[in-house]
Image 1: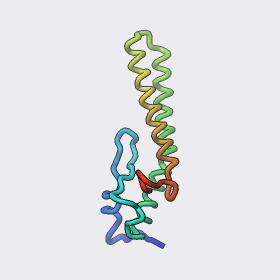
Image 2: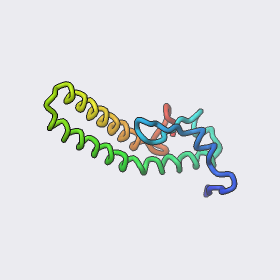
Image 3: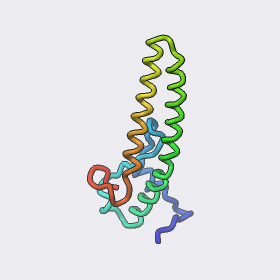
Image 4: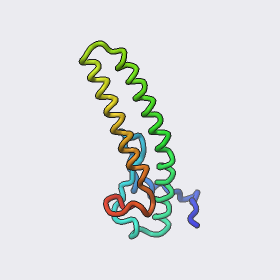
Length: 118
């Protein structure tokens, strides 16, 4: 069983293999090389960290859905076509984020091979 070492920590492993994506509001894996070629302890650390991130995705989606609901209220009240178009663009951007988050949520452990190699 792999355990977190309080003296050493996992900082470098996490920092070297994950990058924060501001658009989605989560850290995404950015592995340098195949996961299977990394030491077993590092593989476990990476997978554990990814599962923790994955666990936050439904909450992130719910928050974005609330943004969409807010924008829909604004859209229903907006009389200016240019403003309505801008609000609609914000709704589309939020929907795109939700779609991307759903894709990332479906990626886990052994299911992801090749490009992401998680």
